[in-house]
Length: 171
Picture 1 (cartoon, one colour):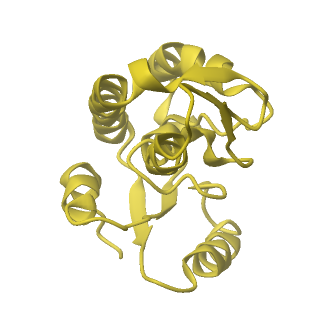
Picture 2 (picture 1 turned 180 degrees about the vertical axis):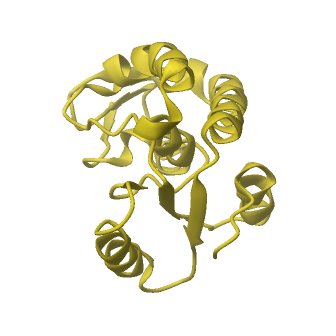
């Protein structure tokens, strides 16, 4: 009756859909133990969530104008991201995408600064509008100079979608 989603997968829409579509029942359980009704949330909710998060990410990037470093590829993305962040953090304020925050939902959450994975996924999503407003009101001096983002590309169109609002000068 339930599909268990591993830790960190709760914000990955593709993994959620893949695992949820394979179950017999209509309920999936996240790593935090929350239950989601798979039937009602699938395409409609995820489509609008992606659009809203993209709009928030674009507004945040326009307001603060950080240098975006995008990393993609089949092997070594995470270790490359970690190495670049370690080197640049000695001179700049750096924010990097943690773990698997590398898709159309995780990247905007990284840009908005919603990285506290100790919160439940529902609390994290309820905090998104408030975090967005807080990020826009913050001084540019408090926002990171560099964003190091790992781009997880696994479908046709993913690269175009992400580069449509990121426009990284370094990739």
